[in-house]
Length: 476
Image (spheres, rainbow, N blue to C red):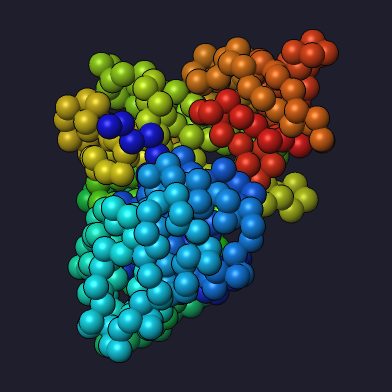
């Protein structure tokens, strides 16, 4: 069965963010890296399509009526539910499923070790005592009963950062600046606290030789980026590069590549799964003043998406066509998600700083599909990362030289949506429309089939699904 997107595990906890973070962390410790994404269940969003499991972490009386109706239907359609205690018959009357599963297991078990699994119809509804939730053995067994892949040996530790540059003088200047900015001498080794967000986890930056990174093998005539950083494991390349100005000491451009991201970032609050074998790349640079792109910054995400596709196509002549799913995802022609991009931007007067992130399934078969599977060969990730960086710079130059109209034409030749019929919501009115293009402000341009007029729209949060031809939008 084709996996379009990674399956989600959704947690209902009455929108208490702290509770969600605690619960999802425990769940992550059991299911392993690189398999599922974790979100709070929001009944206002369409969540059922990619959901592998719903975890109820609220008293049944605290669950909204709308969520109750959705969860009922989800179970009717074959969905799996895990309840942390609670009289579940209060939430889900089981007259249409056969006999009720009985009282809360908190009342049946004097100790967590007496837990018996398999409650509910065809193991689609399991209840475990809330006091047993932190017992990884019990939780892992419950997840397996519900068909969730369970792995308890997935602890990934942050790893050192290795710094490279083609120019040894740049490397010397960079480390001298770092020593002045912040450094701690610990056991004869310089430690640079970069605020990764992990307790007791200073990040060691280790000096690398200019010739050691395959990232610099190609494009020897282009000095971008000035500094390249590689690590086996970080929290998020985007967070590390964008949130830590210390790391960017006295360099105009920098790229970070990680083998694994512990907390990969996607658009909005979305997660991006980054198992070993994937490409997790972020690069930082400053836009030149008074260029066309500085006036049309929304196009940056489109430029990097198109550049990524072009870099892949140039590297692999026989690869099946890759397409862009608006606004910033990369899909196979068969509708399987293979990558995505993320952009952070800051403008201060005439200075515009950008941090661009790209996540791409390269040699990892899970959670969806990889370039290696499409090409039949193992791909050197650093070399591909280098090609993506330089394809982006080339596209930026073309954008500034030829204008956004030429870029939009090329972009629309490489997306999934040309002339596709969608439903849009304009205020309180829903209507049919056809996708036409990207307008001069970077918004999606559609033709309202009722009025035959063009309308520019932008996504409202995450409440749209371009693959299902549904967009809930705000008019521009």
